[in-house]
Image (cartoon, rainbow, N blue to C red; front, side, top):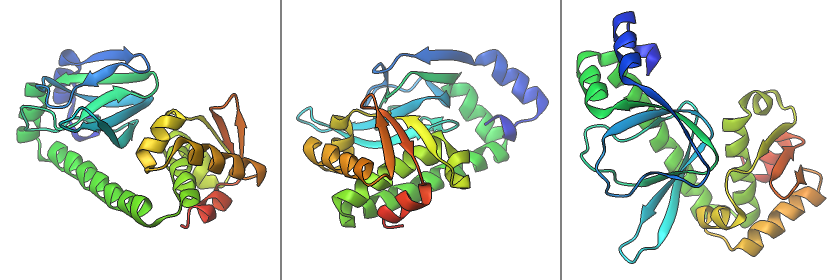
Length: 217
């Protein structure tokens, strides 16, 4: 957001904004809840969920720094958001952001580009969920995390290290697999030397290019 604003607008936004540190597991906004503010993700991972009429939830996406969290020009949220890890947010009043979007086409353009990028990602993820094998799904998931949490290492084909932002149960939900299948495929990647696993959650990808091949890319 900030790169699309001039100095005066940045000062105004700074006066209206506030920083938040949200603990892991805390809800940021509920499905169909009234929207009062928007946020930029500064660090951590946000989990997006959709609630079905019978109360079941489906994980529909993840957001990372510096993603924009919120859906402008809607009175109520269409999805729920919670902190998959400890999350730092810079939050702004809804009215301030929407007025600036009307006044500053460049800001609106940047948010439109993010929305289109998210649409592209959603289409790619449909292929992952609909056509890829269980092994390819797990590799694709790990690649997505690496490219967002450790992008420099992922681009340079160096070892990438991160903590899984989701439990195995959440990963299974996200990928349409069973917990047993998730554990089995992670173990296979470890045995084959593609990844290292420490403390059940800390992942090191030894060779990003090799993992990409396992993902079917």
